[in-house]
Length: 614
Image (cartoon, rainbow, N blue to C red; front, side, top):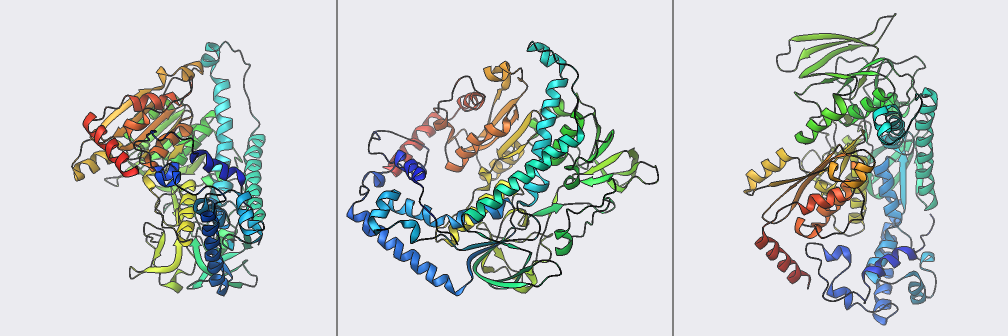
């Protein structure tokens, strides 16, 4: 286990916020000073190197030493089952935890810390002793079979669209000859990116002393785990705390035959899941589609959510015709309805895409003996036969299912719910009797709260905070999501129907503000004026309930709104933020400025915040 050194850069960042030069009259109404490091406490803190700081640091050092001594009864302070993005984020935060504790508690930099204890702090203290168990490959679904390689394919599709759009190029004064692509070269780009990110994740954990244990992890009992490769000897380890982060696999509905893939996953089948047969697949999941072994002339995509939309973008840019099959009455059912309507007009209607809504694909048969893929459709409501399609390939994009089999949950009396492990708001696992299982947590897709890679990482960091003695609850309404089509779609918080439902139950009103990309200088310079930003908020107090964006770089723009929700920032405060000109960020600037909040409520809120903070 490597010891952790102190980062002067991070401490410098803190000093920036706690500078004694901060004007005492400065007001940050609506922004939490605890986050921004502004408070009277920070102004009255002992200066670096003072006797008070030294004594506090010694007490903290003794406390941390006691904690590590107490954990010596276990092989590890923390064991994480699953090395995807969630497990990786938790592992890094766990090992670096002491560093953050010292910075937050002492307010001193690495130089003064060393002078206090008479030797380098990184020689005396370490973070949580952490191990991560992985039975497949580091990085999990996101890095190897999900968001990372798909972004490589989408980068290609974006450039192909630009080169194929003669009208767009002519408007910019450009002339380009016919664009083409090398399928294997595109596939290699995606594979090489996944390999690079996987190596980066592996090296980042090794560099700070996380033990990477290879094999399938199974819980034997409280604070006890076994692991090992399939068919090999197993090892048993103990841990003060355990995090389950096993992720998910593609969900394949009954009646759909996927070429060469076993939809009933076990520990052994998961380990060998990426080993497909060499035969050409014609009915595939997103896992296999990312290999881009073929670009079919006509592909049916079952499901029009994030996965289906992104692959429709890739396939149509590379020349395929696409047919969507959606069980609900409208395409893109998970998005805000107004955004879905606009996205359909831009992403679906002008392209070689048709669709069937309100139907189930009850049976899909792969191409065999020269016959095409056949898809039998029935009406989703009446269950009457509707149509039969014959296509070159079918992509099953009906969502994902938690991978929780073989974890030994029965050994700790935990029963899954549709495969998901039940947890409370702090990611603590709940057993079959409704009781919390001590020292056991579950994050990411396996708990079903929010099936996004960055949500899993945030949940993992939240758990590490808790096992380190600091209570923390993640606000999932502040976690953004994005669909990387061209243009992109992003969102955070509630959709308009969800906000209306909440408002009706709790007795308040909502308001809507909108801005168009057509009024943004940077978007017009790029000739990318198609887009909309939508704000859902409370006019009585300025609370931001949701933000939805469709347009150029929407996935990057959403974070200003996401952070505002996370910090509790109100519309009346964020509208005073300054944005560089000309940038796409001014779309959000105009959005917040256009919101109308009650003047009396705004004044009362600011007054209350100032009274609380000062």
